[in-house]
Image 1 (tube, rainbow, N blue to C red):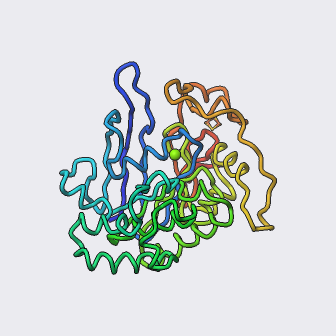
Image 2: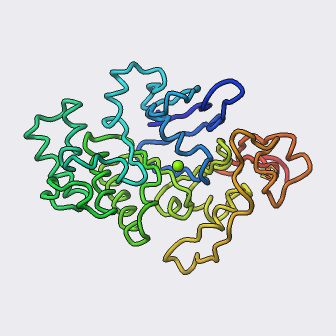
Image 3: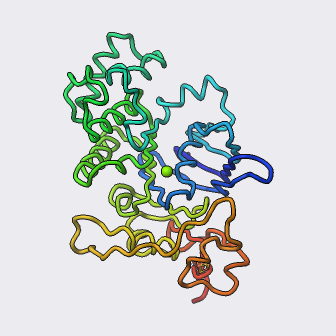
Length: 324
Ligand code: SF4
Ligand code: MG
């Protein structure tokens, strides 16, 4: 059984004529110990998808489909079970730790909170565990007494990671975990995440607009456009030779840092991402697509097999097994 399976997940904000589809039929799987990157421009639905995984969406959101975590559907789970699954089954690291941390509480108390709420430790044991967790993420245990404003951006993101690890989750969802940081610190935090998930055999679902960062960190990549997955496959293959024109444009826009062999001049993505409340007809990428065909405005291609463990949704993709 896969650790995480998404089946036909839809998320819509609002109702009636004002309803805005944010996620439109996503199927994905993540195996235990695997690292899956979800890429796409802002507004493509990737953060909505991350929040949906733990049912953290605002009340205006309606969600359908199945989200199976270890075979249990998060969407139909009773409230008490859901609380246990959050943090202990799966935890989430958000973008910009300054907004996620409480400014007036010491960070040690904030890291201890999930342990205490879940009854996993006594207050004394939680204090010891907080020290261990801080050292685990490369901070001195004594920093437990600090307030968020006393830490740098990178240190605060380390605190968020310590919090996410506190209850020993099997899955960490990281939404743009390094976006607010400068490049050097970003690289350090990425290496830290990689190291920790490897040490503890935690699965990672990492979300970013930066395909190069995901290609460096993850085993597999899914590229989202206008609420759908348009391409999925092994990370290096998708990054180096995307099947979908949008995947290619995204990869050209984000050259890898520090790899001279792969250095390419960045090229901006043409046009703007579509407004989710007024999506183009047919293949939603057609107004921006350099290789669009006449029929592309009429019909949206399904995701289909594009090679061993690769899928892409484009009319140019030759289905595996068909004569070329
Ligand atoms: Fe471009 Fe058509 Fe492929 Fe869409 S289906 S990505 S418009 S070629
Ligand atoms: Mg986002």
